Image 1 (cartoon, one colour):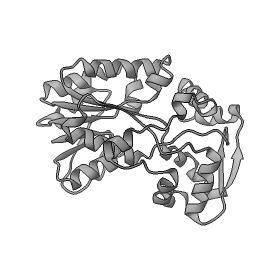
Image 2 (cartoon, helix red, strand yellow; image 1 turned 135 degrees about the vertical axis):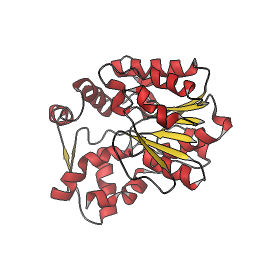
Image 3 (cartoon, rainbow, N blue to C red; image 1 turned 90 degrees about the vertical axis):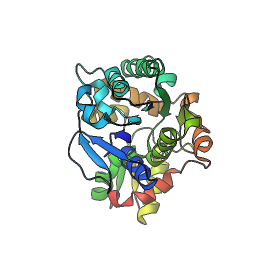
Image 4 (cartoon, rainbow, N blue to C red; image 1 turned 180 degrees about the vertical axis):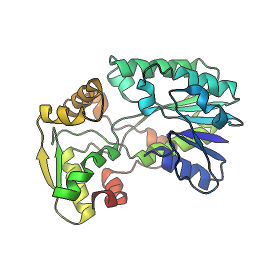
Length: 279
C-alpha cells in the first residue's frame, strides 16, 4: 500500500492515478471528502494533526508527503508525521520539499522545510527528497482574467524561470515510491527551459486559439494581489524570486531526465492539457 497525501491537488491527483494504473494499492489522503480513481481507498485526514493519519498509514509500505499549507499551520509539527509513519510500519517516505531550501535558505518556511528534510534523513526510514522550482500550474492564477477579459496580468513580464509541470513531479514521485534505486536521492525538478510570464501568456493564447493580452503589474500591485491568498512573507519571497532569480533558480536541472529517461514537459504542453481552465 502506498499513501499519497495532498491527493486531490495538482501533484497528488496525477500521482494517485499513475500508481493505481500501475497496479499499486493506493490510499489517497485529503482534508475533505473527494472523488478518487476506482480501486483507490480514500481517507480524510488533517496533516496539522499527525495522529489523524493513523488509519491511512495502517498497512502502508510507502508515503508521499506533501505538506502544503499544513507546514505553516499554528502549532503544526510535521516531523510528527514521519514518526507516525515509522510507527505504522511505513518503510519509505518521499518528501516534496522546495528548491528554495538551497537557493534561499534564510526564510522561516525554508528553515522549517530543511529541518524536516534533516529529520527524514535521520529517521532510519528509506527516503527520497524532491525539490521543485516554480510550478507551471501557478498560471491558473490567471484563469479568471483570461476567461473574462483575455488578459494575463503579472509582474516582471520578461523575467523567467524554468517552470516544472506538476505531472512531471508526480511521475518522479511515482518512481521514487516504487523503485529502490532512488533511495537516498535528492532531486531538483525544473522544466526544460526558462519561460517568462509574457511567453506563458503567448502559450495560453496558442492553446486557446485566440488572443491573450499581457498586462505588466508593478511590484506593489502584485504584492497586494498575492497577499490576499498567501502570507505576506511568502508573497514577498515569491516576488523576490520572480523578479530577481538567482543563477541556481535559472538553472535547468537534468534530474527529471535522469529519473524518467525523458525530458520534462514544456509549459506549452501543460497549457494545452489544461486549456479548459482558461475557456
